[in-house]
Length: 124
Image (cartoon, rainbow, N blue to C red; front, side, top):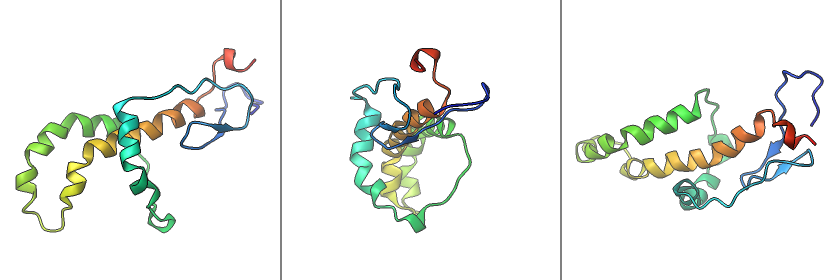
């Protein structure tokens, strides 16, 4: 990973384990025992079950979406009984909102860290 322009973003390809393919020294990957990691593990089979033709491109601020979902979650869950009368609404997805948001956060954080220009100490 090299850059000719000091303002360019430096990136490397990433897998969901936090490993990188590319430049030598990278910031250390820590052992994550958070609720976000646990949610990711609980939802991993579901995530991996999404077929490539079911994927869509979205353009939004993932961190803001996660924060919003987690912030309104108590109110959404308090409306679960009322929402159960809505035809076609998957109650399992409503129940899983916290897991979905936290799993997204678990996936997004390493991506965000790896796509930002590393500090000088990681460039040695």
